Length: 621
Image (tube, rainbow, N blue to C red):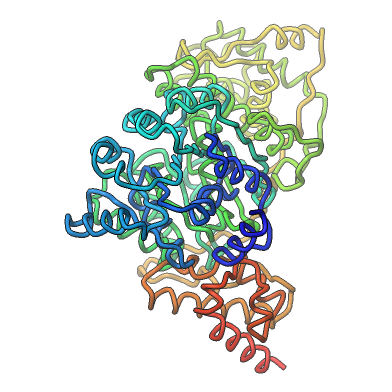
């Protein structure tokens, strides 16, 4: 059996070996056992049920929450020569009946269906099938404790009642212990084995910027995109209006982007998503409505214009970058205004206590000055022995100094106001601002008025952030976000303890940035050059031949995809193209050994890709 599974893995998916836990999960399913699988986005969850579906007789039922995600999965399977189909209410009735006939005839190996459709099909259609297994994707949606609860998922318990002998595999990318328990109970899984893969995604760089105003954020984003010219990326926004405004702002830099949010007309959303998936546009500015429908493997970066409300949301969203395992970048902007908005949402939710706790965990991540990857792994119950070396904190470790005097100045000012000021007013007092509100309140008469005028506002913002993070100050959210000294802060204030702060670093030093500002459009409305010609994802061997070959392969992939009407990454992933550049196969037998080349794609595309590789190598001699 093991040899057969390995042969099927190579034939249909082009992989020579399984990823960690995949083989064990597949074996459990083949033994007709229920399972719960936690794997990060891009960790290989799909193969855990797709391969046994191919191996076993009958049809596998796959519950998936979004039509777009079903479409993407089905197209990918069909491209690999695997009979698959989706059944949803958007299809014409005739097409639905045709798919049902093919399923009852045993001609479909994987049938994708929405959770809403389960109840309507549970009595007549589903019992007519020879079900090999049932896979429930995005299983966290069934839990009230999960980050994306969907009421329609709660009806899925009917599957175990109607098909008690059919193994069920529930899969999700993010679920804490509480959510995992809830998934098992809600789905009525029978003594399931729980598989938890490593949540480490070392190919993702993690970067956080804080305290930037809107203009600085836009400029930083423009520089970031220019450094990733020709690469696909997602900018997540909290508000719908931010998506459209950001598209206009980027246009001023000559950067083409599309907006995506739930308030758009369905055809507009579909067009925006289709353009992005098919590489007709590289940048999409989206709310989380863009979420689970994206299975695009060559997303190279993700930016969060606003902080997410939980680490689960954040981890799942950044996981949409680098699904193919190639180096990818993430950037998150953090401000206290985001924190206040999310806190309001959490307090108004039906589970305010747990949502406030998750928000606090997200805040701590953003404010941390220790390895960010270690924080993420720790959150998901995984320990890392060493720092990652691939986050902003690791790349630019802070220099620490005795900041006790700064803490004393700040806390003294807070106490002298009667603990009635927030961050901005505190800085105004320390810097001797002449703002009307400062004078009206009489804060200019305080002994600490002007005590910190030697430091710019930006520097004070940074140090006050640290004072909050280190526990010298706290924000009272119930009283208008005023600052209050903590017990530890009072010890520093009265000389009973020292406060060690990280030396302020200019924002440009935290995440690598171009020294020159990105160029906006001239007043005439004509765009000045801002982006270079599309480049390979990264120089693979550092040579001109490698760069030329990668670009040529990518163009060929795009042409074939356009002709076949499917996204380019479904032809071959970027990782597969990279392997072609590294190995440079000039025969079909050599091409067979490329990572991600199965028998179906070898027969279908082998000659044309080998021919192009030969042509480029001959031309570059």
